[in-house]
Length: 349
Image 1 (cartoon, rainbow, N blue to C red):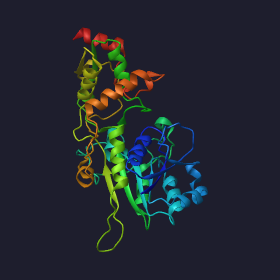
Image 2 (image 1 turned 120 degrees about the horizontal axis):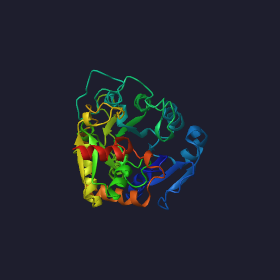
Image 3 (image 1 turned 180 degrees about the vertical axis):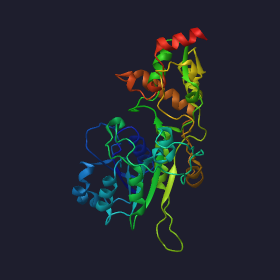
Image 4 (image 1 turned 90 degrees about the vertical axis):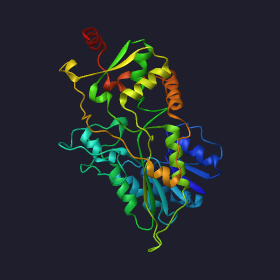
C-alpha cells in the first residue's frame, strides 16, 4: 500500500510511520523539513507547507497514494485543502481528531453547566455545541480557529471519499510537548514526603494513551480493509476512539508513577475545605473524560503492544533526561499546590 502522511515528523507521527514501513508499505511524508524525525531510509519526503498543499499536487499525483493519513488537521481549511488536492488522486483519508470534540470537554471547562454526560464516551456521545474551544488561549500555539469537529464533518461529508476519524486521548511518552507528568516527577525526585491532590481531582478519571500504543492504533486504521455499503455501494465512514481500556483515576496514575520512580512518599486526597480559598482548580471534576475504545478493539483487533507500567516507566526515564525548561509548563503543574501551602496542610493533618 502507498501511504501519504501529512505531518508525521513530531511526537506521534514517527512511530506511526515506523510501524507502517516495517509492514512493507511505501510511505511518503509531507512536511516542512524543520524536524529531524529519524524516519526509515525508505520513506520519501515531500517538503512544503500544508496550507499550500494544492501546489504540491503534481508530486502527490506522481506518488499516487492509496490512502492519505492526515496527522495535523487543526482547522476547517486544513481538511478542505486536502480534499481539493487529492480528489482525483486518492479516495481514502484517515484523519487524526481528539477527544476534545465531546461535550464532556465543555462541561469540565464550565462552559456547559447543570449537566453531566455519562461515561465512557462512545463515538456517538454528544459533541460540543460551542466551537473553537481554545480561541481565548490555545495550548502549544494552536490556531484560535482550531476546531476538530469541523475537521471531522468536512472529511465525513466529502463526496466520493472514505473517511476514518481517530479521536485520540491525552497522549504521553517521549517527546511529549506537554511533559504531562514532569511536575509530579520533579516533586518525587526532590524527595517530597507527600503530594496533595484536591479530592475531586484525585478521583477524576480521564483517558490517556502511550504514544507508541496510540501510534499502533493509527497504523491499524490506515491498514484496515475498506468495506462498502452493500445497498448503495458507497464507502463506509468510521469513527474510532483510541484510549486505554481501563482508565485510572488521577490518584491511581500518580501512585503508579511514584512506584515506578522509586518514590517513598504518598499521594493524599484532601477535601477542598482544607485548601486556601485563593486556590481554585478551574475545572468541573465531577465530569469524567473517559472514552470507550471497544469499537477499535473489536473491529480492528487493537490491543496495546506496550503495557501501562512499561509505558510509564519509559516516559519517566525520558522526562528525567529531558525535563522542561519551565516546570510550570508541565500539564500536571496546574494540579499542584505551592509546596509551602502543602507543608502547612500536612502539618495541620
